Length: 249
Image (cartoon, rainbow, N blue to C red; front, side, top):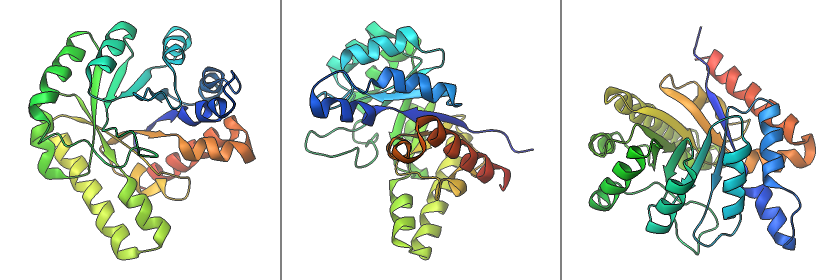
């Protein structure tokens, strides 16, 4: 039987809705508890430098209240490192961040950023935080990921999701092959493989079928579907799609 794939639910956009009015509702921490009740294996939250959605107090409450691992997405910058060291989440996923972007637009350039990233990965690791690198699905950079001594990579699935949305079969096949090769290469270096960005119940199956992928982190689609299905229903629907994709591997 194919192994299961963990589902991490990203709650950033519950905070986006809250912040639109500047109040306290809807509460992203309440959303995290609902996601866990529906079967989420972990919760992901991105504390951006501009605080456009998740706030510092959200991270503190999530760490204090969650019965499952907290994955803190963060820029590899001094302020965020200090917050991670003070909070001690289960994991920290290092992502690129630009203030003008609507969402994370691509993977971290770990080759050009090696000298900057190496001490950050080491410091977080010494504190017992499991470091993940959010990178493009490029098998050629896995040696660099291994040299950084990060135990996890999260493969950016955005290009694959865009290909599916465009209905471009050749591009879909190309992007899936990139993901498969990158995942296999990461596993060669004993790096755990996660994936995420742009995944939906319609496109998640082939990614879940990649044998080296053990965790998928999904947020925007689940929160959007919660409008129609309720949050617990949306989480369960995603879980079912992931399990169906894995079973068909």
